[in-house]
Image (tube, rainbow, N blue to C red):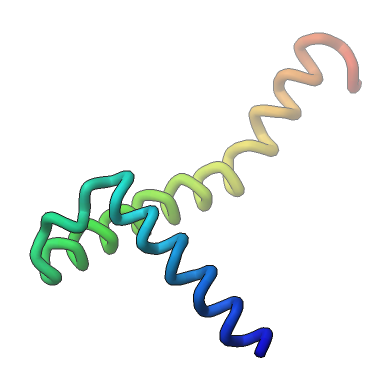
Length: 68
């Protein structure tokens, strides 16, 4: 029963995503291309944040002399 409820909720969220981004008007292959690009851009942004953010935070902390 919980799986069915979770599946309905995920289906509803996906439908909302399609409506908000107007992807429901695209053909399935166009939707796949768009979603693939979106996932790759978000993945690259997360990776870049993971790799470079600690360096920038340490530089800011050193600049304001919060950390020596």
